[in-house]
Image 1 (cartoon, rainbow, N blue to C red):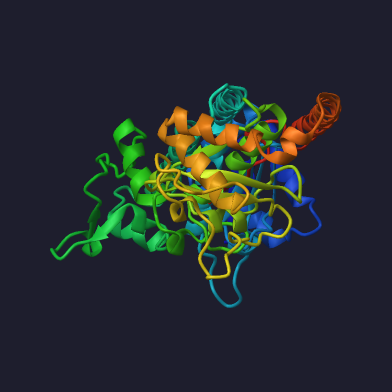
Image 2 (tube, rainbow, N blue to C red):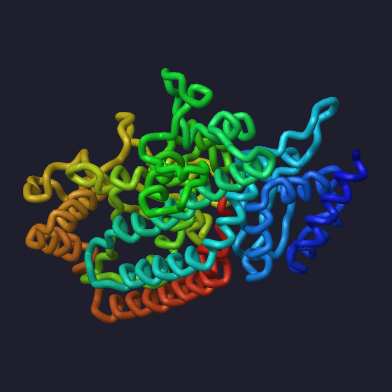
Length: 449
C-alpha cells in the first residue's frame, strides 16, 4: 500500500511544471528540511488539484521561486516578494508521533500564500503609487502634510490582497475534499481545516450542515467554492483583515492587527520622505499629520512592530487629527528594539500634547520665553485650523526675540549658510540611505498568514 501511495505521489510530481519541480527539489535539499516534511508537501499537492494548479502557474510565470522554513512564530506562512519565496511552518508539514498527518492546515496556508505570489506585481505597483504620493506631499508647500488619504489607499491594497488570499486558501481545501468525495459539505470543510473556517462560517441553531452556515456577507457557489468577486473580497476583508489584534496576533510581539502591521513600514517611508524632501516655509518646518483613529492606527502597536525612520536617534513629531483640537505626538525609530516610547510627560504626570493649550485664536499672555513647548503647540493648532493671522503673529514673535535681534546680519548669514549646507548634506544622506535600505516598499514586506 505504501508503495502505491509513493508511486502516486511521484506521478503527481512528474506532472508538475519543470520550474515547480525545481522548487520542490531545492526545498528537499535544505539541511533543515526532513524527508517526512518533503513527502507531506508533495502529498498535499497530490491531494488538492487546485493547489497543484496554483504552484504550476506561479512557478511557470516566475511569481514563485522557492520554499523555505518559517522563522516567525506568529504566522502560519509568509510570502517574501523580495526573493519570491514562500516560507512555511515546518511543524505544519511534520507527521506527529503515533498520529496520522492532518493536511488541512498546510493546504489552506499554502493556497493563501500562493495567491500572495500571484498578487505581488499588483502590490508592487500600488507600493510605487504610495511612495510617489508620499514624496509629492513631502515636497509640497503646505504647512501641514496630511498623509491620511495616501495611507488609507495603501492599507486598502493590503486588505484586498489578504482577503483574496483567504479565498484561495478556502478553495484549495474544497479542492482536496472534492477529489476524495464527489459532494463536499460544510461539515467536511470544517473537519479538514477547523482553525480556518471561522472567517467563513458561523454557527447555526438549525439542523444545518454540522451546525454551521456560510456567513451572510459571503456568496458560495453550489460546489462550495468561492469566486473572488468584489463583494466576496470585501466580505473577507471584513471577516479576516479587520479582525482585532487579539485574533490576528501578528508582528514582532504577536500583539498586532493587520492594519498596524502593514502601516508600520508605510509610516517609516513617510518619515524618511519628510527627512529627505520637506523644507521650511518662513522658518517653520511643515508638520506630518495623520488621522490615527480613522485608520485604526495605534502609535504603541506601530512602534512595537518596528518603525524604520532611517535614523535610530530620530523622534519625528506628528499631529494626530483624531480629536479636536489635534494632538501633538511623536514617532520614534524602533526598527531594532521594537519597544514603544511614549510621549515625554510633564511633572504633573500628563502627557505633553496640543490639547493642553488654549485655543489658537486666543494667544492670551503666552510667551515663547515662558513655555516654548506650549507656545509651539499653539502654533501647530493655528496652522491646522487655518488661522493664518495667528500663525504669522506667533512666528513673528519668535523672530523678534532679543537674541534674534542682537545677531548681526553677517553672523545670521553665516549661520544660515552653515545650517543650510548641513541640512542638505543630512537630507541627502537620509535619501541615499532610504533608497538603499528600503528600495521598493513592497519588495521588503513579508506577507503573513
